[in-house]
Image (cartoon, rainbow, N blue to C red; front, top):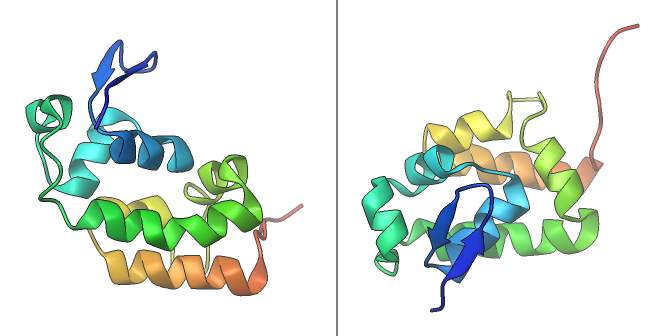
Length: 116
């Protein structure tokens, strides 16, 4: 795995897969660490191969990214849906709830709910 500069972090991210997850969902470093259950040093050192969450989340997001695009995913993840904001499920590491939210996105599209 190579390393890439990430201007949002002001340092290097050593995992292409972690960087992809950050970009797809617009996560910051703290959010990514929480989702993956690692500390910042582990993230920066690139020692993420043992984290099963990363490839599973990317697999779940691939179809949605192809259909909706990363810009929509970044907005969707922070928007209230039927079961709350998907980012909240991720930060609780409730991956089943996040997968349910992705299934809702696939079935219904990105729907903004709000009053006038």
